[in-house]
Image 1 (cartoon, rainbow, N blue to C red):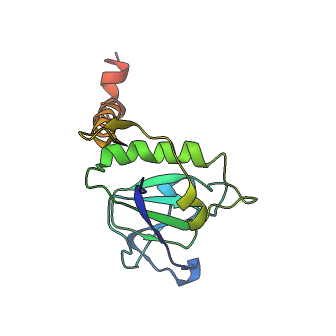
Image 2: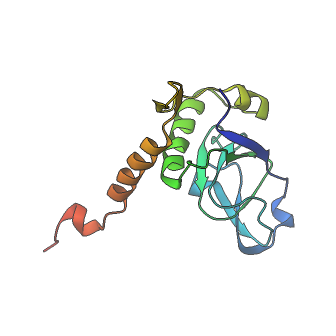
Length: 164
């Protein structure tokens, strides 16, 4: 079966060459959605794509969903979803699956590369199509992701109740 993504690479842009701006700059960090800076650089990639760290501060193997157009360093593999059904909610679940299945496997001794990522198999929910073939259950992931997101985004008062 084919892959879920087309892989792209970011470009090298050292700190000294970056001017402050509004564009998210994604690099090899496992915190802040891997955004290390906001820079005056063009968007190399559109919103709705994933980033996967191949080299960084202990973040190798971490995946993130990027909700805004962004630029990325060469420490990042950028993943373009192939399926039109790959909604934001489904991709948010998929980044967790990628992270949990890749972080234990990859590190500085066994670096995540485009070649290794291309061979990487991950477990994802599947369903059966009308011809009896197993396919990725994008709709199920979208629905489950929507439920999880609604739970996470509830107002604090709904979670804690009224504070006297």
